[in-house]
Length: 203
Image (cartoon, rainbow, N blue to C red; front, top):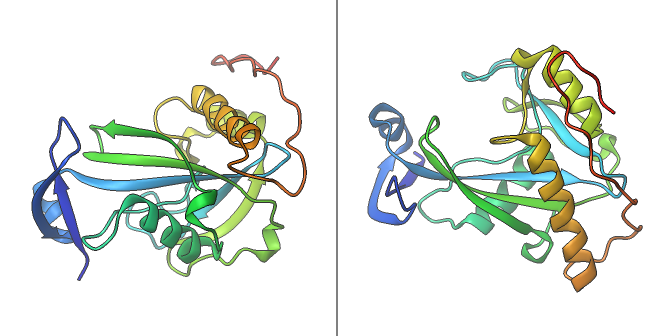
């Protein structure tokens, strides 16, 4: 039985109360989750298609992996576990770049968000049965275009993925310059992306 720690709605701090997951859902209690965005040196984002048997958002494409933080976990250990379980990606805590902790009222969670740089062929990834059907690398332009034309088939970022993409890329750039990460190949140069307006096109 999965046990989740409950947090204060306004601060995200632990209350000291832990509940089984089904009670958390039934009570709409606030808890903690992680989101991990995986990017490669080409500035592509690893997206996955949720399993068709999932209760929530079956078959929807997502820009990140992650999950609820359990009673005996912290954010970092949960993020590493989710990478391993959902995608078969082995990583260390030093590779995780924590770029934001944010509150999501609609989901009643406080989520810690990470970005990690991994140059992996999609064929090497191992989708978790019952959780993930497929992985694919997408360029940011493709993700925003897909979300515009098929919003029901995409869960893109947390709040505003146009802004979040630049934050992710900036976090990786800063980590590289400070020596926190040492990619096997240099990060590609990039320029700010024009916002995709409804009914418009990418500049």
